[in-house]
Image 1: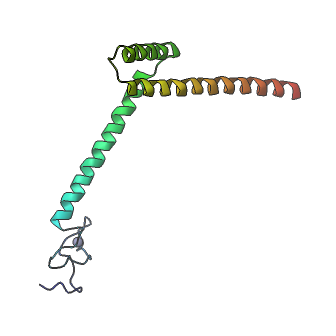
Image 2 (image 1 turned 45 degrees about the vertical axis):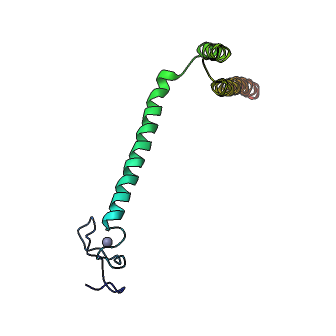
Image 3 (image 1 turned 180 degrees about the horizontal axis):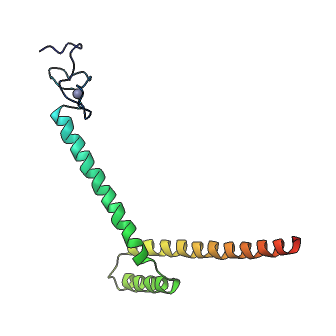
Length: 128
Ligand SMILES: [Zn+2]
């Protein structure tokens, strides 16, 4: 067997046709069909699948963990109390404080959107 650049990989593609890839130096298989590559591909697929299932789990938690403003205020109070009592780290407190600001900003945007919609309805009523 010679692999001087003219040889072809002895692997078979998923379609069943012979691989047209060039074998790795000193080997009869190309980089794709070489067993070491297959291990890396399998590891990559496993990592991808894991990431996907983590995302799926996060998505599934969404409807259950949506809080009302009052519930969120309760969480902020519990976390603040926990930080003061030394049961939670200041980092957790800072993260929740940051989320609380985002929550407030989103609520404000929602309120402004409602006002704009009301004004648009008023303007439309006048011009009609
Ligand atoms: Zn090949």
